[in-house]
Image 1 (cartoon, rainbow, N blue to C red):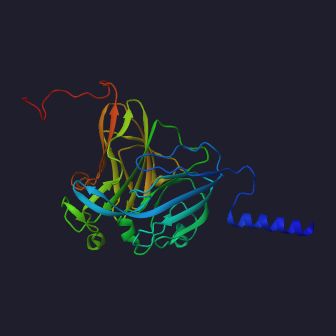
Image 2 (image 1 turned 180 degrees about the horizontal axis):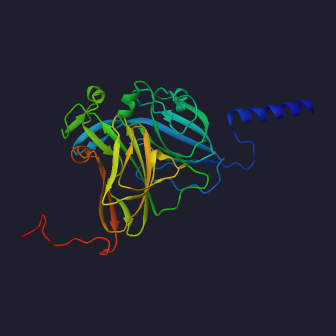
Image 3 (image 1 turned 30 degrees about the vertical axis):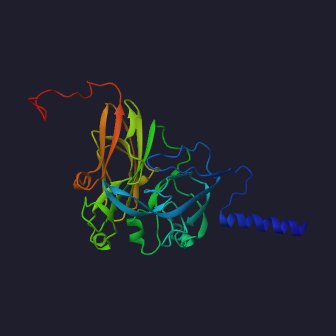
Length: 336
């Protein structure tokens, strides 16, 4: 009996040390991952579940601009990588695989992790390898993750980043539509608009002179959708590696902004443009009152107009003339 008691105590201490739940009510689940611009469903259960997350790093060819081919380094075959959603208090077992077709080692640093390197040292993974680690989600918020294998800036510049949302205990206020967007700056050997396969220019990257600035460069083409009267939430990240984003939706005002992805503090209200640093994120909520196409931009505006940092939110519904209506007093089509 004394021996059984001793081993029982040791198992309990071991569970406490690594943070594994000891209660029988902790759920076991696999995190639902989504590719941009889709968002995983809200988590309605309490925190404290045992959650497994698995990502694979791959190096794949894709389109960077019209007629421009680029070899992306990715999590899950997409840029940005899949969006991860967990609950504060969850116990996460994270596994990273590196495709045996990769030419480089890869790793992951999740900014939501409290621990050395955000998991980077534990997940430095050679091609064909598999690594993992455990962490407890201690702080709610929206966080960036990225590769941290040497040379770190090169891995990030080639597209290795994404977002992880740690839902607060009571969740976020309900909205009608949620979308996932990450901005990144890209540095090609050719000039902006130069056709064909382009390589990575470390010289341009060190000079912080991007050839392209893009939202979700590997996402399925098409506009984001909403209807008049709906509340829209955008989870916006900045993968960098260099530029700070001045995120703006032309023709809308953000009703609420969780600046820097901090959901545990009072959000800002009635914001026109919000700054998102490299390796940072923000959550913006707004109600769409008038139909039309709303342009998402980095308001460092040359990046949008000349380098591609543009997206569209397409809002359908009846006109609302008491909020907005054009007046025929001249314009681009005057005289026609």
